[in-house]
Image (cartoon, rainbow, N blue to C red):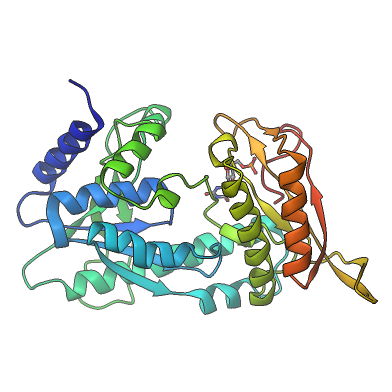
Length: 326
Ligand code: XMP
């Protein structure tokens, strides 16, 4: 019979056969459920011949890096390399406000950082072994959309690094190729991953970098992280996580509005709450979050985050609005 338990077992066996008894693999963790479950399956198949890489670009939400570093590792026993690249990303983003330019910079820095980590892992792996497998969290709908077929990823030209071939070809390992998202979540639960990770809402690769309207700075990120953490905590406390597709909180960092608090006037920033419902992110509707939940979020954010003095709700569907503001 069909159970989530034997789906996981089947994939573990398949991956073990693909990688063989001495193959080594690398997996990039994004903080999301797909890469985490893919890594957990491969870890079961080949143990510490798998090395995971997590690039901390400094654009994650509050607690997410610790969740990977601590909780994911505790749950799976996976060997993990964390690259602290916050400084590098923020320097590259300094002075940039244009959304597509931000995306390009973040994407470029990400590939650079990840490739450098790959090279380090390859160079430090036991003599005579080769690391030639790259784990990816491709889901069944992605396989269908791209017309099937297995791919190879060509990590190009490490010309400046001695001792490695110019073109390093990785063979892809895709443990989730036959699964839908809800099945991935069930496998994740089965493998004992933390529930906050398993049930996490989709989160964009460029992270909070595209939820700060204006230049991205450390200070602005910290402000947004506090507001976002409050919104997430209140949504969870209200038991609404699974009814909402995504809940971006957006900081209008270049806008100021006058407010009043205690005896004085304030001149702070507004945030926008953007809770949406959706099936696949192609279209979306603004979520009718109960007023009392919105009220708690608003009260807490304006009380607890000094720089924010106004909380607004985005009631635009997609189309014409997108889910993210950038
Ligand atoms: P929009 O804002 O276009 O977003 O309605 C649709 C979905 O895609 C996510 N998104 C991104 N994901 N890199 C990503 O990995 C990006 O640059 C990016 N931009 C948007 C968004 O969060 C939503 O789930």
